[in-house]
Amino acid sequence: MSSRYNSILTEIYNEALPLKQTGTVANYIPELAKIDPDKFGIHLRTLDGDDFFIGDSDEKFSIQSISKVFALALAVSLIGEKVFKRVGVEPSGSSFNSLVQLEYEKGIPRNPLINAGAMVVCDILIDKLKHPKKEILNFVRKLSGNQSVSFNEHVAASEKEFGFRNAALANLVKSFGNIHHTVDEVLDIYFHICSLEMSCRDLATAFLLFANHGKLPNTHEEILTKSQTKRLSAVMQTCGFYDEAGEFSFTVGLPGKSGVGGGIVALHPHKYAVATWSPRLNAKGNSVMGMKALELLTTKLGSSIF
Ligand code: GLN
Image (cartoon, rainbow, N blue to C red; front, side):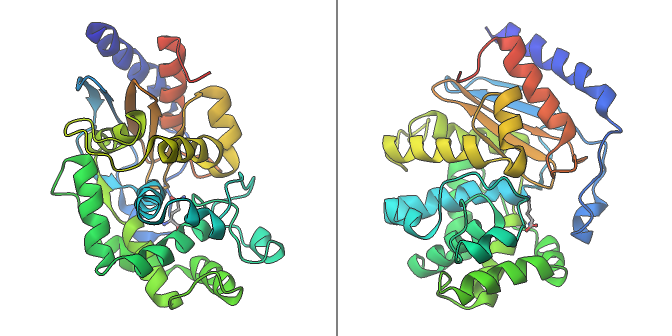
């Protein structure tokens, strides 16, 4: 199997390369626009602990919205199903920072993986944690097994400076009473989690939790129950790619999550987690080469969850 994974990753890498010039780097967060657009890496880690990787897979990048899954997992581990009283589980069919649904759905975000939903999750974390930033960081470090995972303060500051739309979202949710702390506190946590920097290796390692029924693969410590893990994977499957969640299900067929830093991470329950990174994005904010690489992966392996 291992030589098969190795040769498949090489094939995928080469077949995705012609898309190198397609798409644009996120530039609405100026600090993100500084990234080298030609970076491309893939890391696949199996539940048996085997690693397969190619390209810039060990370089850290801004994980952006992928962090919403970590925030959600931590919130669910703390208060369980109650999270879903304040945020829905339906795909939004809208962009990640859309304001319109929030108005007519009275400040209950469609799901926890769009910006407004993640802000409600951040509000819950502020409520439940004494030192939210530190404890979120420790949680992500534990899942990834990498103590050097950190926030990038420049990215967080850049997001804050240009975060007019995110401020509008937080204020709108707050006006409906679904944010309990101050808008500034919530945005501070939100911008910091988005600024987390991790490599494809770190992300693949961390997402093995969801492939392993909520238990850390190395220590078997239970972070989430089986049922919670199933629900989180379901939310990733239906909502992980904003208004392209259908497309990702259709072409890749795995639960996953993307971020505007160009990262995508996906998992095959009971088998593996895989992360890709290429900063050029399509119009929906998803990495062009990452989407292609994962489509090729499940096609060549002949297996998805369907
Ligand atoms: N920090 C980004 C934002 O709030 C995250 C968006 C994303 O990765 N889709 O706009």
